[in-house]
Length: 124
Image (tube, rainbow, N blue to C red):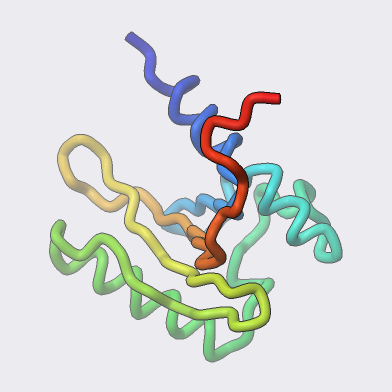
């Protein structure tokens, strides 16, 4: 069974930004939430571009350190990289590995802290 469409649907339906990069820091995928959040920088036009081009030298150095940490041990898979007080969200870098545990890339995940006040199971 090909699970790729299911995983793509999970990422595309996530209201938080998800940006996926390969080991060369090339943006290979971003969901609609990420494209909308990065609209002023080109949105979906960022696909195929170097993630580091959007970051300061200090951030580029941090990305390289995290990638090296991911590569050091298969247990090193997630690091909290930033808290955005204005948006009340945490940002994480998460390792992506193939079935053998080899590091193949990483993604940036935004997680909002604001409680969802929508009624449970509201279907209307």
